[in-house]
Amino acid sequence: MKKQTLIYDGSFEGLLTAIFQVYEERLNDVFIVDEVHYEPDFFSEPVTVYTDDGKANRVWDKLKDYKNLSKLIYWSFLSEFDERERYILEALHYVLKTQNENDYGHPAVLMLSQLTKKVGREKHRMEAFVRFKRTREDLYVSIISPDFNVLPLIAKHFKNRYADQQFVIYDTKRGYGLFYNLDSIAFIELDFNSKEDLEKAMHEEETNYNLLWQNYFSSTNIKSRVNMRLHKQHVPKRYWKYLNEKNPL
Picture (cartoon, rainbow, N blue to C red):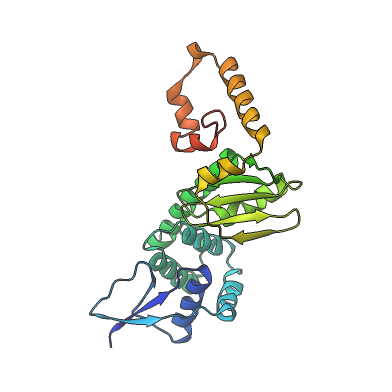
């Protein structure tokens, strides 16, 4: 019998549904792959997985019994690493068999841990470096393009920090964003040309604020004491576009 390749829709719920199918049908020689990365294989039988929230919830409820493993699986999924599904399935098999979710000597568990650390660093940096622009409708907007899909992980931080203002954090790399309406956060999709459209919608006071901040930063910066190497170490150059002092618009 050919091995099976379970093709899912790329969502976390879709992945959990595929995992449910693996255990329900007791599949051994099996791969799980995002439909975006699927390539036909003569030696493998393709099987389309249809996302089922009920099955996904059952798997996630089971994973909640393994606090560390559930975090490793979710955060690794958000890394968007091409082979994350293989490591997730291998780690899950191992932990359910041994009940040892902290064995980083196992290659799959170690890989998920490494991916989780990378995602965690990006989460921390987004929380530190994201800046908002005020629009004429008093909506605060931030345009980002993080290395990993960290929007679901930073939502709580910004909701707590900016509880008194409506805001949108939009990920142009993945085409979706967060919208906070002073009550709850929702995931949204928008059709706009990022920076150009933001400039048109920006409140007139925002430009003045940017200029003031630029002048303040310049006047307090002592050029003779600048250590650019250390500066780039703490604030990598790819994050400068989010900072007012580096990127006035």
